[in-house]
Length: 353
Ligand code: ASP
Image (cartoon, rainbow, N blue to C red; front, side, top):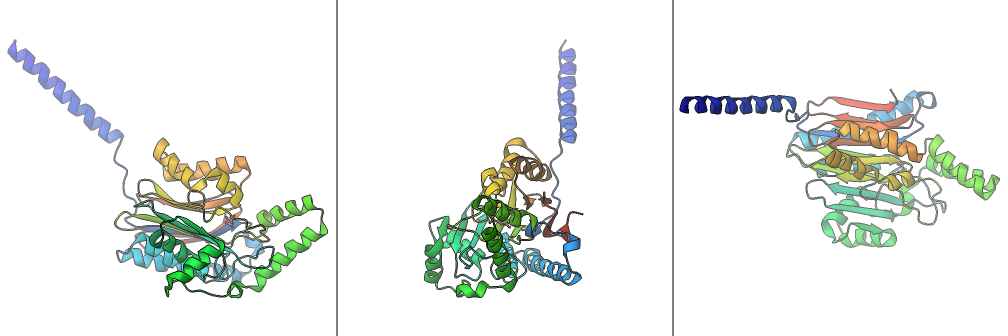
């Protein structure tokens, strides 16, 4: 009798072990795809080959590659994701090719007003500036708001005053005229003329048209995963041509333009900010991963191709998760973008394919 009991016990234990093994093999631990990785965007919109000259294409290619390689080098040497994001974005801010820093679009009043945000996925600390006008590299100021103030977002003259008070060589103060580029100024004149030619309602539509059908984009963003498993994200922009009344877009809003969480992913957005704010794009991608267990690609696809499209929002995101998966998802004809993995493989893209 005792022997029969032991026999049953052995059968039960071994069947449990068998089940656990089956369970394990059915649901394997997700694999680390990249030990570290970095992804950037330089804006999404009507970026089509037929609208590009070979010279301009080359210029975008080279600048995207230059910027991402700087961040990649930091990560490769064991550096911090936050340092990689800041250094990479600064290079794009300094380039007149993008709508951030030098090359920012003009407000209705003919000035340049800049927005940026920064987030640390390890601590969920974040910093942002909105509507500032005298800081050469707004991304660095956004990071300083995170580290050197008890606030998350500073705006307008207050943000500029905070920058000055820091008295830090990394936060260079420049006259607003520093941001001038002829190209962006001409863009404003085109929109102003269109506005003047039409009745007020048509002018609003024209403005939207200018935003969605033209290459008025160029916001920059970066997300990085470092060797310690930390994710950081940042976004910087001049906003929208002809913006009025202190309009602020999604770029400086944590959860819309930027989000980072080591447990899920980091995201930087670009596109028609009003829609990205309403859809809480960056946080929604993270939330879909956290609450619904979606993969990074499933989450970006759901938000960019479904939720945003249903609202009428155009644009895209770059994102990466804690496993080093990378996503560059957009619903516009193009998005300036680049990614680099831990093997140093670089992919630069602009158009849909
Ligand atoms: N999202 C930015 C804004 O609405 C613009 C852009 O990404 O091009 O201000």
